[in-house]
Length: 139
Image 1: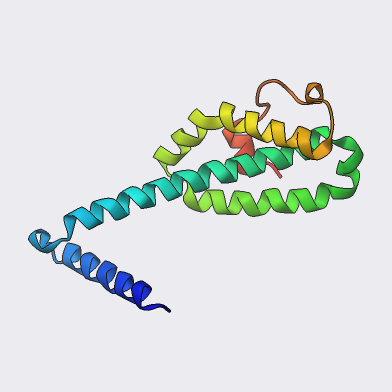
Image 2: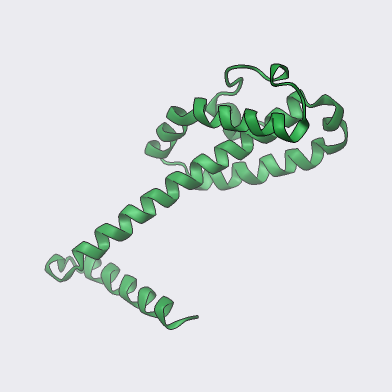
């Protein structure tokens, strides 16, 4: 592990201990704020990416019938892996974020499904055919 990583880990452990001891006046507030903001951005990005990947694979399974016969099991395994990761990340706020971004994520997934399959965009629905519940559990 690099020196910078060790210093970061040590700093983080110190901040956690200060919080546990409720010695708030000793907190490195500015850097904690920065770290929490970065963590929030990373989690949001991760949830949106996983939802996108699941939608893309479901589109390929459901609408690319010619290839689905051969690739279905692989795509289902991918969906399952993404769902497990998503399940570990979803909170109430991140679930709302995923629902709010579903139309945009679907549009991106549809665009890439068209590109990957070389099928007409008309082959895929205009609006997302999957609910967040489908995305979380179908497979």
